[in-house]
Image (cartoon, rainbow, N blue to C red):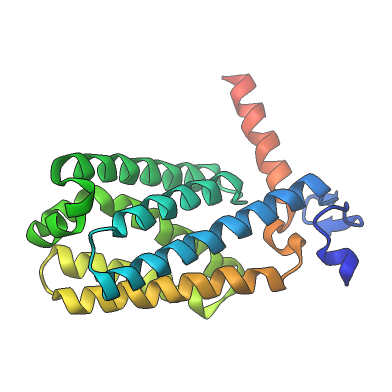
Length: 220
């Protein structure tokens, strides 16, 4: 069991759909970095929500910044076979970060959430950041059927769309985000109970898709 969970040893040969493959120690290190990124993303999200609840939103931007960085790192090391899906999540993250910078410049970092409160439509600028996080949650649910992952996939869109359309009040939105932050933290902690190979999946599928992509590129 220790062998299977080691992040620093190659796996034994594993039979895949398109042939046998080995999960290398480098693959496992990427999995470790991905899991740490998800864990810290959940941690920063939860701390930011807690500080918002106890001391107001003036300094919450700090935790949102570190949450965004952690999310970006998780997208760097995440294993998604479909390259277009990975690219979409990355583009959403980039757009959300740009929106975060625009809002910070316009309202000032300490007044960022006050500005969002007074101008609900401004959520469109930072929304792609959370859309990217929702995508990560969906990937985790699709691959592992973790209930906390589907919670993230559902609650974050409900919170932001409800706030954007003004169908939900601030208390409801805050509650949905608080629940989402807790679920993300739980997801990050529970991922360490899985062997590293679980996050890699069937590597032969990735190798096959990559070879097909290179073949099409060489023919064009």
